[in-house]
Image 1 (tube, helix red, strand yellow):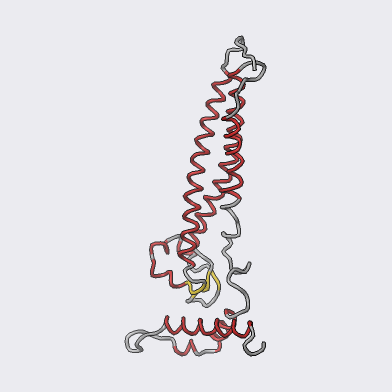
Image 2 (spheres, rainbow, N blue to C red):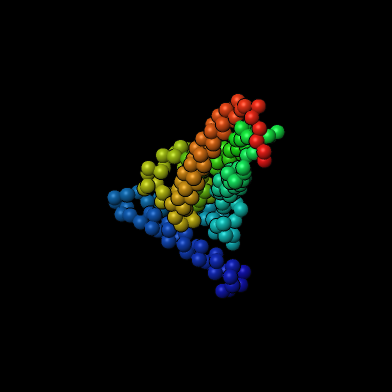
Length: 224
């Protein structure tokens, strides 16, 4: 590692950030608050800091939350919702002339097909909703100021950390990761919930419409 190279400056800056953050965290009057001076100067703590200062970026595959890599917003709340939406739009522009000349029977087939599409939407929105809820409950994956390692510091809190804003500072790096985690999963949770409700309503509506369409008058015929 040469002097003033990219790797040299990267390690130097990360070491300075770590030292200043520790200074800020434990800056207090020894007579008023306990400061773990011996622990901070120990070789064990130094080895822990050595594992933190590295040449990898925060957004590497090992430092992303497992719930972010699920891509539930893209797959569950996006792709699996576009399919039923396309089916619904297609059915809206269909004239439903019917099967074998029976208009009502054709409408019942269309309604039942909308039910199948809505079930796919329920699976996608449900996946998005569940993963978002887990992401909020377990909290972000970050560098913990307490354990000096990359962990999920709020896993055992069962979402209680959301109401304890003073605990958010336990995540040292990346900066504002708790706020980012809260905003991302809250938005996806709301959208996933809305999509889940709409698709569920469509299932009920389509099922009732399909059942009622079966009771069509078989003697009445329509020319397509």
